Image (cartoon, rainbow, N blue to C red; front, side):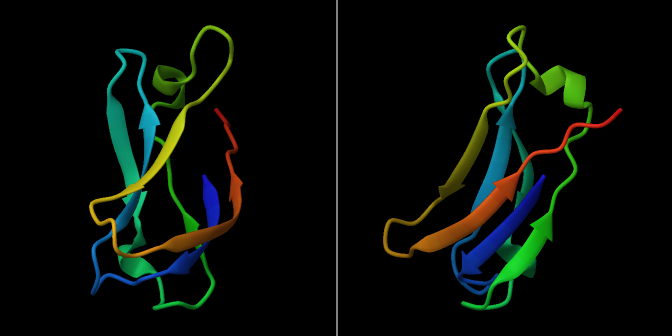
Length: 84
């Protein structure tokens, strides 16, 4: 997954990306710890075992969350590429 991210860096509460697995749980694939503070940054995350995250309809559920309610973030682009 490739994300264009603008927001806090690793000195603030992290934003994280997760994908839903076929058991219904969420697997974290990356976070904003390597981002530059409020400077656009392209982040690339690898989804281990992609087939374990694609449902019968061919959909992938992605979650973008943070443990804080006081900071914001912006996404310019989120691209999911599945390869074998």
